[in-house]
Image (tube, rainbow, N blue to C red; front, top):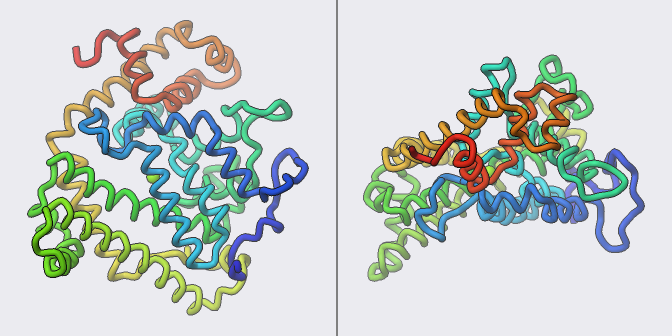
Length: 374
Ligand code: MG
């Protein structure tokens, strides 16, 4: 069933701490389940995707976004003959390192760290979570995930240079990640581009006319939908159109990746790893459409004046709390005060803040820095 270029679970490089085999789940299925049972995964429920304040109970948060990406990933991985268990695990874990308040929180945390000559990277943070912060098992710290999952966490969205990141040397930084990891960044984009159009429309921050005028691929399908369903409500026309956009992106990712595998005569996982570039990709035509959706969302949603206040609040809460604990490390919880003995104080504070949910960080802000929005 698996293609020659898929990752075979029997060929896994294994776990840091060897464990006996499970009776009816393979190692990637167990990794998927360990992610689902982790605290960091549950906290995704209260982390912003795009909308910090809840305009509506219908909007995505990081957990429901993650579940949607996992769905798209299973479809794409299955169609390409890849290891669906591994790909699904990587989709479920892909946002686990994100701090509260979405992109604004991430930026503020990175800015605070850079003042101390450090930085924040959510992939590296995800690795720290699954290697160290999660404590569920008596025999080891972390989740003891297989090499392929840890490698995918680090390499799914970007390459890391061995000179700059010697601590990541074990992750074969001179090689491409398996296709199961390569598709995650692309299925993530398919997921959030279409979902953010949906939430933006639902929030009345984007109008149908605006989307039709600004997103050519949407407009193309909208004409088709109007011909088939001329009398239905606009909301349903939107849904039918957005569904077609999602399908077009996923179909193209599958067919174009297949073409690239064939043209490059890729037959094995070793071929994937040693190829000069990543083989999972949209075609040039659909990639341009994808970029148009993204540009439209940046211009009309992510930086819209309607979201500016909550973005400012998010940045202020993160940077004020960071500064507060730098000045008052004794106010940190006991476990973090202890860690500050082994690691730099900014790193410990960063780890603490990055793990917080939106609600928890607001509570902390009110406790230590006065009421939100004062
Ligand atoms: Mg994501």
